[in-house]
Image (cartoon, rainbow, N blue to C red):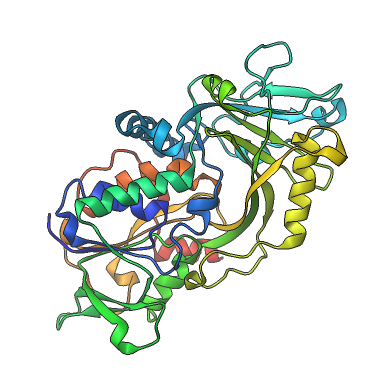
Length: 428
């Protein structure tokens, strides 16, 4: 297949899609367009990197299993342990006291809500050697429960995975346009989509604009997906309702998490905190611990071309205090956690809790506009994965490439389709 394909958004969903598209078409006909001056400067580079196989509700279960298995296959085939920190993980829920254990609120509530594992019976870890995370500071009366099955959860460094996927794409011949933003679409005399005009985001000069040939258009712009769709199809009555969930994070080093423990695999810890949020901690190969859980749906979404978002100082202070309390040495004056990185990212979400992975009907684009029929053309959207963007990334790339190229999807994603009729349903 040689139809020129333009992918708007070079985050992990975009580069995954380009990676799998390039296995079945001339890679030089695939264009990745990214407006941010820093690649992977939002959720793709600043997420936790936690992977799960069977933690999803019915509409996502097949995609979740496909993606988890593909993460493992890709790591085994390309040295993922060394290149992007792929490792099996043990997942636990932690309560610092008996009162916290008996509370109605759990640190893993967001994982369990609507998921296939919501009613799974947890296993108390206090008496199980080797499963409890050695880097967690233990308190008298605390409580740890195992909430994952053997081989059902894993961990990656998402930034390193993104960099690997992009490097593979570019080496194959996929064309990266960066930094550049979409300006408009072009049609021929019959109203058929034939191109996308992009502009260099470092310049306002019209001479810095370029038209890319395009029969297939794929929008994977994360939290900015709705904005991109509106820019390109201003006369469309369809709203692509992608919102953002902002999340602050820290990357830390602790002397209690070191290479000698890595042979036992990584850990994911979910807990609650007296400040009213639910900290999440993920140990990674290489001695790093990712600490997050302070989220907001009200922080303003920055311009996609602005680059890395600036974290809010008060939120970082709150996170750091919680990290020192949960992971520190216990001696306030001699806290031994080393700060490696601070971050703020914006995760794309939908109001109904599952992503959009869908073709867009021609009649939802604009009156009189059409796309090339069959597998040679079309407009597609993939966004709204929420906290599962990294976990779902490879499976999404596979099925999106299959849809675009007219092949049978490897997982049932019929429940993730989106059109004007569904938009009206959720608008009401």
